[in-house]
Length: 470
Image (tube, rainbow, N blue to C red; front, side, top):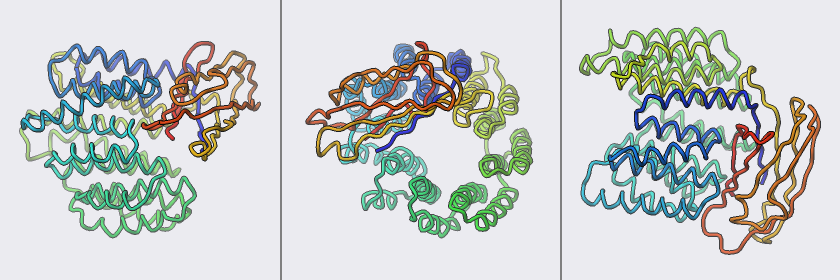
């Protein structure tokens, strides 16, 4: 298998951490969980671990404690501490099953967090019965389908699994929006892996879209399908679908759905190089979000500001992913930050976390990549137990300093010839090659998760991704 890791500058690291630190100043407990999840995603599991330990001690809410335990387990997995992670996950699953038997109130976000943790550490065949038992408790078809797709199906496909088991899982997704979403995400995976299966999956998705009532939802899905068609050089089809998507979004009567659809289409247009058209749609989306308190019907008027701010926070994330950081921050600052208004404070914090995510995903020109690491591990390492890992490090800018790849967490699964690989005086454009003899330990029952910690003069860099899962 081959792994590629992109390294970003210390300036980017500081910017991202600063945004997340501002977010957790709100003191809202759930923000600790969302901030920790973002830190894990962005490559800072040790910082997430500290926040989650605080979250566990600062709440008496059982759901929040279970959620924090699940996130803590994932942080430990990323740090290479599998034994402790397994104990936490098993404990959380037992506690959750007990609450299910007692018909206690359970948040779907708690179930989703535990499902995510189970899928992260166990092999699919061992995780499946645990996950099935947990999500069968969820009566809401939309929520159950969302968890099944985002936490079960897509992670397995990203690990290279697409077989009858996955097809059966797709059939279990009863909400049509999420079934179409799953097909699109699987198609994206096959595009990245040069497979011809993408077109067939997209055709399946298109046949289902007319069964979705919401024009805004249909618009969002069509724009996603268009982006995949564009990536397989079917530009005419992509353009036709984008025109239809924009038309559907403009005709959506629900202003909340309309604003989200317009923003998501704009985000996709940026990825396709249509930045001018994207900015026009972002303008429409932002304008619609500001009018929610005036036009939205069907809920109590005192809830409308919170609905509006929740939508703005989602648009902030799309702006950030599109590289529109200044506009993202301006919109985030429209959301109230007074400490006595917890709803506004919450959404402002979420918006800041979303900007941090977006900055890393788009690698702004202000925060350039500094290096690119490529590692190849033999695909047959499981059968022959031993292999020669080969890798190379190339730089985009001069790094007249010491860089260390810390692979010490790999010793859980492998006997390594050395745990740290060090480089110095890396010139822009230069390539440093290395090899490492590794031997797989016997009787490994969990997934093999291999964190890579990269430090520049002792400072940890943002890397994407930070681990390999075999």
